[in-house]
Image (cartoon, rainbow, N blue to C red; front, side, top):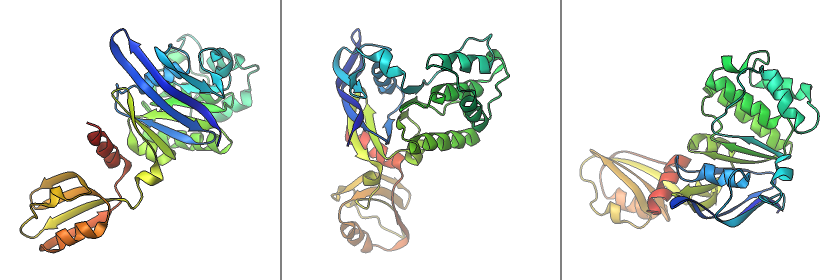
Length: 295
C-alpha cells in the first residue's frame, strides 16, 4: 500500500510552548483519514508543518515521497488546502479571485470553477466583502478543489456551513475521493468524521494516542449497554473487567463493554430489570473512551 503522506516524529515548539510532540502517522493513497481531537490539540500545527507554512523543531514529513520542507513549492501544486479560517482581498469578485487562484496552477478551467460553484450554491458575481462567513468558506472549498488536486487537506472544513451545505460538501469530497484523491481531514466534530473517514488518528495535547480503522473501533468488541434496574443495582458492576465510561442516573446505568458479553449479562441477569438495550457506540463515545484512557 502506497502512502501519500508520511509523518515521522514530527515535533514543533513555539518557544517553550508545546505545539506537537513526536507525531507519527501515514495517509494511504486513496483513503480519507480523519485527524481528530479537541481545539488546541495540535491538528492545525501538524497540517501547517506538512504544508511548510511553519518549520518543525524536529522530525520529518513527506508528501508524494518528497520532503515537505525541501520540496514544499513543488508539492503544493498537487494539494488542495482548506484552512480553518479564510481571508481574501475584499475588493475582488468571487470569479476574479478564483481565476487568479487557478492561474497558479496553469490556466483557469472556467468549466470546473462553475461546476464547483454550482454544487456549493456560490454566486460567482458577488464581491468578496459582501459575502457572509459561510459563503467565504464556500469560496475556500472551490479554491481548494478547482485544480483537481491529488491530495486534499481540510482543517475544520465545515465551520460556517449550514447543514445543507455540509451535506453538499461531504458529497463533493466523496466525489473527489472516488476520482482518486487522497484526503486528510482534521475535525473536532466527530459525527462528520464518522460519515466520511475510513481511519482516524486521535491527537491529545500534541501527541498521537491512537490510530485505528473506524470499523475496528466500532466492531463487536465494543458494546454500549444501558440498563434500567427495577430495584437494586449490582455494586460490583463498575469493577467488572471490560467496563468503562460508566455513568449512573437514578436506577439507570450505561457503560461501554469490551470483551465477552456473557460476563456482563450474567452480572446483570441476577437483578430484576425494567429495561435493557445493547448497541454499538458511536464514534464520539469511543473517542471519549480513548481520551479518558490516555489520562
